[in-house]
Each structure stands twice: as structure tokens, then as C-alpha cells.
Length: 620
View 1 (cartoon, rainbow, N blue to C red):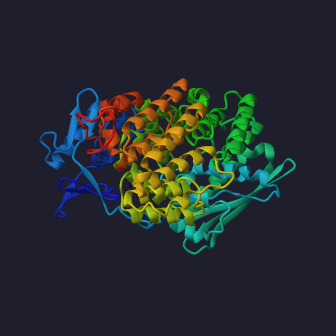
View 2: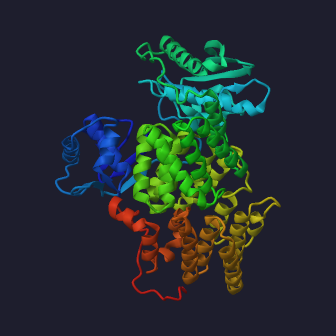
């Protein structure tokens, strides 16, 4: 993304140099800013068919623009590239454009901690969750909610750089020096504070801290009635911008008074904030409690769009994480739809709807939903993370998934999911094993347990890839409280590892996997159990059993008009025999991949190499 340099043909494109690209010899090729942005968007989606509507939305958000304006940008790019025909950009009549020249990433192999590519903007501020000083840990959500609303207001101020909540909220509760936070997030200032509720009064203290020195630049206390909470947020946001104007940039606009609050029912708002704060921990009790709180908020105010959005989001993410069954899909879909009916500008409502579409195999609709979400909230690493997780990976855009995962981690270096998933997508993309191990260590260093999925599973796959499988079984051990789906995965992995280390054990391993498959069919577990069986059968050379498992998984998911999730693992290098089998085409059709490829462009080159005549037995 902004800190990744792209190379294609004889050209080099650096997103930081917005008015030119360079040839291999360093010679600059000027481009107008809009043409540059158009080229950058196409390069980032290289290989995919980019619809005209998506380009117009990305380049002119919220503006009605004639299609001829886009045609002019494409013509200018072609002239700059010397592209008289379709060497770089192919026009798909009536649909859009496809960048067909292979693209490589320059200098993006390091996946460690964030190193800013340039000095931070003077007018830049990271918003940290406000500390709860009420003495009741149950009120932590209030400080999180206050900070999020401030962040949302500040992010709309022109020329003010504000990292998304995904980037800054991960420091909540951690003893991290504010200067380190500023360096990680590449900002000049950090906003922190505290909130206290006593009776019908709320007191908020806020301060701006210089990210270079750690010294306080500005502070102010606000004491209001609890009923005036929305007005307090508004006043605080305007005071912060005024302080930044005086300290750094007097050209920053004074923000107007806040528009209508998201709800006029303060208790409904409190319930929403508490429920939203429970989604992040990723446990079943938290997701169940979050749903209950969102429903309470909706009961109090049926037209509170944020509460419908929150319900859709906690259910969709809960399904994907295997915490909630697929039967919740319809509820999540309805909640997202209602949220968008009430407020079409809610980025996370579009994202939740896109998640549901992806789990139904409607990847074209999912792509459109995530694109819209990212236009509405372009600085948010979490939305990029969801996009690559739900669309890029399962459809075979592995190079793009890796690039955006790398960008997400750099924008949110202390966010554990970004660090963990970068290791996972690097494995799928067949990156350097040392890079994957390094990323695992970063995740562990941030506090992710080494025994927690997917760390042992990633290490096991690395061992299989390296042929070093003899002594890894112990790392797949399980504690008494280990979830049943994790037990399923690790049981299958242990058999696979042993069979790879001891060829004579292969027959026994297949019998053990068969027994596990029979148990899964009766129990209907999470999707991850089935995906691991498909991978294990493939790695042991039995494609017939692997495709049988894929069929079973899809048959079970079809009860809820779904394909399930986690199909991105099919693009691992070890799964090439599975993808090359003649049966893969029918599976791709059923997954909805074929329709996506026809509409948006094929998967990465080389991922599918059909074998015209392969034994139906599936034996190697």
C-alpha cells in the first residue's frame, strides 16, 4: 500500500511519489495526480477485473462523475506507459479494466515491526482509549466508546491524520511509552485521558502529548451531566482540533457542531458501546453477551443503526471464528441490511454484509461490499484485514492478500490479529520460512500464546514443507480446555506428520482420518475441522477422500445456504495436486469461485494447473 513499491514491465511505482512513475533507469514519467491514483488502484488489483463503478467510487467518492472522466485517465496512463494496445491495461467492454502486466513488490520481504517511511505529518494524532477511573472494570467500555466517537469525528477533519481504532486501541491496558506509540503509528501527537461517572455526572479529562518528547501540550477537564454526554463529545472534539491548530497547523478547519447523535436514547447508546467493546476478545461468552446488549439497544431504539450494525458484526465475526454456528447467518444478514437501510454510510455495516456474502459464496457481492466499506473508511486496517480474509484469500488473490496483510501489520504493528494473519498468509503465499517464523515470534511477543491456534498448526505445516516431521507431534498437544474443533485439527495433523515421517504408517493414518471424518459427519463441527481433513488427505496422496470431505463440508453448510469459511487454505502450495485434479472445477463452481473469476478476473497465475487425465482413485 502506501509503503510498498510496485514494479511492472520496465516501470516502478512508488505510492509516495504521487505525480510520476519511473522507468528502470530512473527516468521519471510524469502523471497527473488523478491518473496516478487510477493507475495505483489498478496495480493494487492487478489480475482482477476492476469494474468501472468500483473505480469511479474509489477515485471520486461521494461525487457524481461522468464515465468519460475515467476514460480520459485510462488514456493518459496508456500514453505514459507507451501502451498502444493491451500490454498493461485491458478494457473489458461494458464492464471495466484489468491490469494484466505481472506486478512484483519491491523491498517488501521484511515483515517485522513498523518503520515509518517518512516523517509524520505535524497535524497527526493517535487517539487512545480513555482510562476508566470509576473503580468498576465493567465501565471500561465507556472510555473505549468515548475515544472511538472522538476518533470518528477527528478522522473527518481535512488535513488531520488520525490512525484508525484498530491501530491505536491495541495499546489499551498496556504499559507502553507514549513516544513508542507515536513512533509505531507515525504521528506527532497522542491523545489520552480518563473518564469517571459518579451519579448523574460524568467527568472527562483529556490531554495531548508530544509524541517526540512525551511532554504534555494541552489538557482540559470537562464536567457535565450524564444526559449531556453527546454534547460533551462534541465540545471535546472541537477543543482538541483547536489545540492542534494553535500548536501545529492553523489551516486546520474548525469543525462544526456535531450532527444528530446516533441515537437520542442515552441508555441504548450505553448498551451499544458495551456490546461493541465485547466483540474484540473473541470468546463465545463475549459474543453471546454482545448480541444480547445489541438486541437490548435495538429494543429501546429500533431505528438505532449502529446497534443493528453491531449485531450484524458480532454475529458475522463469531461465525467466521467458529464461535457461532452457520444458523446465525440469516440473523447477521438481516441486521446488516437493516443497518444500511437506516444509514447507508456505515462502513462496518457494509463490511458485515460482505462477510455474510462471502460465507454464502457470493464473492462478487462481497467484493463490492468491502470496496464500499473501504471507501467510507479508507484509513482502517481492520477493514483491509477483513477484505483480504473473506475475499482475496478464498478466491486465489494470494499476492494481493499478502501485500495487504503486510500493509495492515505495518499500519497496526501492535494489533495481534494482523501479526498472526501475516504469518498465515505468508505460509499460503509460500514465503521464506524464516519470514514466517519471524512473524510468529512477533505475534508471541505481543502476547499471543504459542499454544493457541494457528501457531502450532503453522509450525506443523512448515515442518511438513521442510520434511522435518519426526519430532513435531509434541507441539500439537492440547490442554483440558482446548476447543473440540482444535482437537480435531491437531489430531489430523499428528497423523499426517507421523505418516510423512514414517511411510509405513500411511495406511493407519488414513484409517484414523476416516474415523475422524465419520465422527465429524455426525457432529457437524466448525469448518476448520473439515479444511484440515482435506489438507491431510491431500498431503497423504488420497485426493478422492479429500474431495469427499470437501463435498461433506459443503453439504452440511448448504443447510444454511452457505459454503462456510476458511477456503483460502486450498491455495497453499501443498494443495496443488488437489487444485490440478479435474474435480476441482466443479468444486470451484459450487464455492462460487468460478463466477467471481468470470466477473472480476482469474486467480493468481500458476495456482491452477489442470491435469487433463488424472486417476479417479486420486493416488499419486
